[in-house]
Amino acid sequence: MAMGRVAMLAGDDVIIPWTERAIGKEEVALLLGCEPRGVLERHACRPGFPARIQDKPAMWIAKEVVAWRDTWMRRAA
Image (cartoon, rainbow, N blue to C red; front, side, top):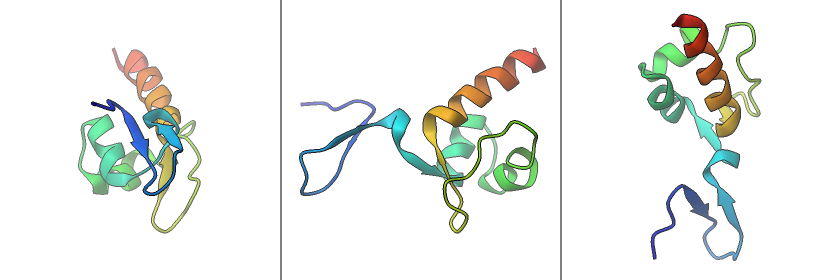
C-alpha cells in the first residue's frame, strides 16, 4: 500500500501528514530549488520566512515552508 506524502513513526500507529513534518535544510532546499547551504544563507534570514522549530540542526514545518515558497514565487513572477 503506497502512503504517498505521509510519514509513519516506527513502532507506532501514528501517521503524520508530510505537511506537518519537521524538515531540515536539505528538504527545504529541494522545495526552494537551491543548495542546502543557500537555505540558511539566502532564504531563512528573509523577513517572513517561517521560524525554525529547532536551531541545530535547523528544522522547519513543511507546510509553512511551502506556503512561504508559494508566496515568494508569486511575488517574483
